[in-house]
Length: 437
Image: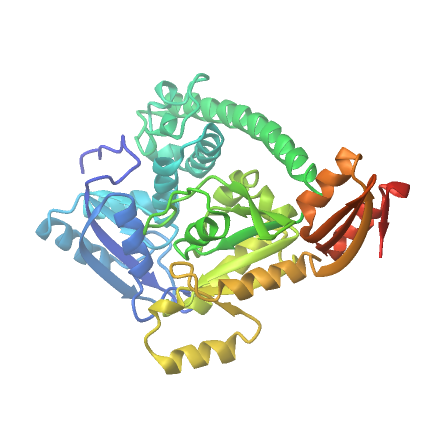
């Protein structure tokens, strides 16, 4: 077979055949095994022209699938004029080589497809560095079979995710392979140092806000986190009905009540079997979730396999060390549930969850009340006698209290106000200039 042209990692505008190998321990949807891969492929820009599902008791060490299925794929590839075969499984370098030899087309696996999507959606320098590191760590073991011209794409000046666009090209020999390996190792070391610095800055930045209660949105991709973020904070955030629309963490102030504010962050969405090196590379981006006082786990209640999506998110959180964090499960998109019986079953299955619609705002009041309670922001009616000449004191009261009534008697302001109980200790720290009753 002639050498395949593997100079591009992506599948933009390519005609794709999707393949799912269903093993006994597979966690793919048995009713639609290729549903998520189909969405991933479309997000990456591919045109899905054919699909194939193969059930096996155990995988084939050489090609993952049997020779008969490989021949069937080859026939479908020719009949449908397919450019790329995408597997909903993680394949070894040797398996990719054998499959490409059998079907005479480019073959990529699930991890490579997700990395391609992340590369396309990376916008900030930080996310580009993270994607590039994940790509290089993914491709390093595959060098023998996959690329030859790394020196022109992974030079010291390259910083963007596109800098590794040559992933997949085959090398002419051992000499080129060793050159490529040294270049990859050098570039990986540089990226890890840069990301370690970013991680340190991020940790310091997050820790510096410890005096403010922090809330972080986590969840499966396309669960509606960005829509909820916009509804709660009023900030203009990017919203799209596609996977991984948001890669960069965004943090805004969320005013729960007058005088009670928390910090709300939105993170990258998760999927099942998210590549481990991708999670590790994006650790700095997910620092908000690691250090958050409260995680709001947003799930798509209208999805048929919402329980599996919830489990996938919990698995990633466990990998980040957040499994013991204070978490509030919020089932979103209840406006899309038309079956009353399904709604009843969900309420019974997730008794402690909140049910909302970020699109319509239904149920959000209860979410605000719950977060207010979790943040220690229970409001108390207080009578304050304060020296109004103390500018810092009056500014504190104005910021953290909802003033019901106030009178002035010489130098003293007599104020009736509602204030979060967790702010009363700070108020009393102003000393003799304030009396709280």
